[in-house]
Amino acid sequence: MAQYIVNLVWDNEAHVWIATSENVPGLVLEHGSCDALIERVRVAIPELIELNALDTGDISVEYHTKRRERLAV
Image (tube, rainbow, N blue to C red; front, side, top):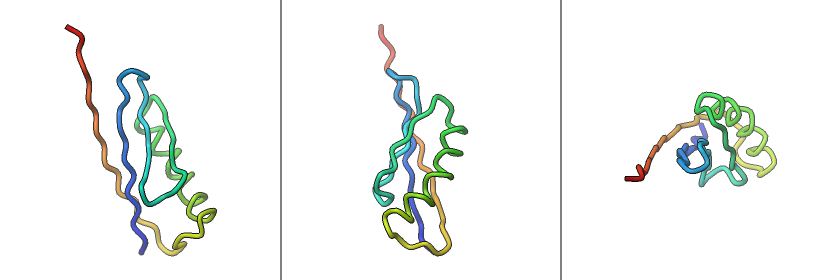
Protein backbone atom coordinates (compact mmCIF):
# COMPACT_ATOMS: atom_id res chain seq x y z
CA MET A 1 0.00 0.00 0.00
CA ALA A 2 1.39 3.38 -0.99
CA GLN A 3 1.07 6.09 1.66
CA TYR A 4 0.96 9.75 0.72
CA ILE A 5 1.13 12.63 3.18
CA VAL A 6 -0.71 15.85 2.40
CA ASN A 7 0.05 19.02 4.35
CA LEU A 8 -2.86 21.41 4.79
CA VAL A 9 -1.75 24.86 5.92
CA TRP A 10 -3.95 27.88 6.59
CA ASP A 11 -2.74 31.11 4.94
CA ASN A 12 -4.11 33.87 7.15
CA GLU A 13 -3.29 36.64 4.67
CA ALA A 14 -5.02 35.01 1.68
CA HIS A 15 -7.72 33.35 3.84
CA VAL A 16 -7.29 29.96 2.16
CA TRP A 17 -6.13 26.46 3.04
CA ILE A 18 -3.20 25.27 0.90
CA ALA A 19 -2.52 21.58 0.18
CA THR A 20 0.97 20.37 -0.74
CA SER A 21 2.80 17.08 -0.57
CA GLU A 22 6.47 16.14 -0.68
CA ASN A 23 5.74 12.72 -2.16
CA VAL A 24 3.04 13.70 -4.67
CA PRO A 25 4.85 15.92 -7.18
CA GLY A 26 2.70 18.73 -8.55
CA LEU A 27 0.17 18.79 -5.72
CA VAL A 28 -0.52 22.43 -4.89
CA LEU A 29 -4.17 23.32 -4.34
CA GLU A 30 -5.97 25.97 -2.33
CA HIS A 31 -9.50 26.64 -1.13
CA GLY A 32 -11.24 28.72 1.52
CA SER A 33 -12.81 25.60 3.06
CA CYS A 34 -10.70 22.78 4.47
CA ASP A 35 -13.41 20.19 3.70
CA ALA A 36 -13.73 21.35 0.09
CA LEU A 37 -9.95 21.31 -0.28
CA ILE A 38 -9.77 17.71 0.91
CA GLU A 39 -12.36 16.77 -1.73
CA ARG A 40 -10.23 18.46 -4.40
CA VAL A 41 -7.16 16.60 -3.11
CA ARG A 42 -9.02 13.26 -3.29
CA VAL A 43 -9.66 13.87 -6.99
CA ALA A 44 -6.19 15.23 -7.77
CA ILE A 45 -4.01 12.62 -6.06
CA PRO A 46 -4.90 9.62 -8.26
CA GLU A 47 -4.43 11.78 -11.37
CA LEU A 48 -1.03 13.05 -10.19
CA ILE A 49 0.07 9.56 -9.16
CA GLU A 50 -0.70 8.33 -12.66
CA LEU A 51 0.96 11.32 -14.36
CA ASN A 52 4.09 10.89 -12.24
CA ALA A 53 4.15 7.10 -12.74
CA LEU A 54 4.10 6.45 -9.00
CA ASP A 55 2.79 3.30 -7.28
CA THR A 56 -0.82 2.86 -8.42
CA GLY A 57 -1.78 0.10 -5.97
CA ASP A 58 -3.86 0.76 -2.90
CA ILE A 59 -3.54 4.38 -1.84
CA SER A 60 -3.49 5.65 1.74
CA VAL A 61 -3.58 9.41 2.30
CA GLU A 62 -2.68 11.03 5.60
CA TYR A 63 -3.61 14.68 6.19
CA HIS A 64 -1.58 16.97 8.44
CA THR A 65 -3.18 20.33 9.24
CA LYS A 66 -1.56 23.45 10.58
CA ARG A 67 -3.17 26.79 11.25
CA ARG A 68 -1.24 29.82 12.38
CA GLU A 69 -2.63 33.28 12.81
CA ARG A 70 -0.99 36.57 13.60
CA LEU A 71 -3.02 39.17 15.34
CA ALA A 72 -2.20 42.79 14.68
CA VAL A 73 -2.08 44.65 17.96
